[in-house]
Image (cartoon, rainbow, N blue to C red; front, side):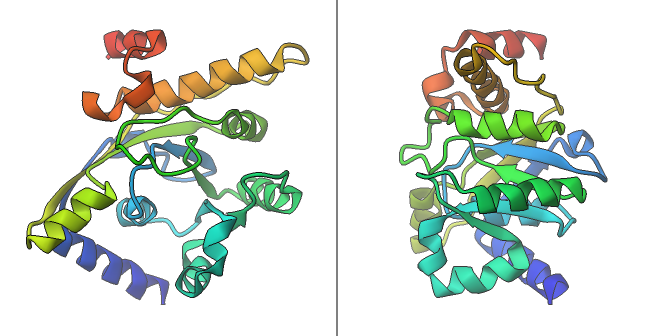
Length: 221
């Protein structure tokens, strides 16, 4: 079933869009790691399954989508974990940590929700806390061209969209210190977001467009 679903997914996406994927050499072929990506459209999760040939990829999804019958069905095959965004969800956290210990890939969107304007919103510190806690490599991924209004607008005019995925070099976060955790978490969050932003065209960088760390990363190439 999963093989058929991946084939069907790729067929459908190739019908509606031309997809360019860059940076495959930066994605570990085995083992557990974290993919951190910007979030600009409903198609984002599907694009990650489109680009990666592993099924041990799981994605935290806002609890509100659990009420959708199709997404509940899809969750069995796409490894969605429905998570409470507004309250401590210890059950979901334990499941995430357990899956990582078994060598799975975690996909996170630090913004927490889709950007309505395409440009990046501020990342949430809870995601950087989780990434540091897991102590796994983080692969930043920049997504461009998956905005809902762009995809739907092109479909209405029978045009193919152009979608670009760009994976950057993996990096790691140090352990959280016992003191000043708030400031350190903000620094970690900025690091993750800027490593995503540097992979994106200028118009997608949003609140990180002028960030000092982004400028440093751009100079590093």
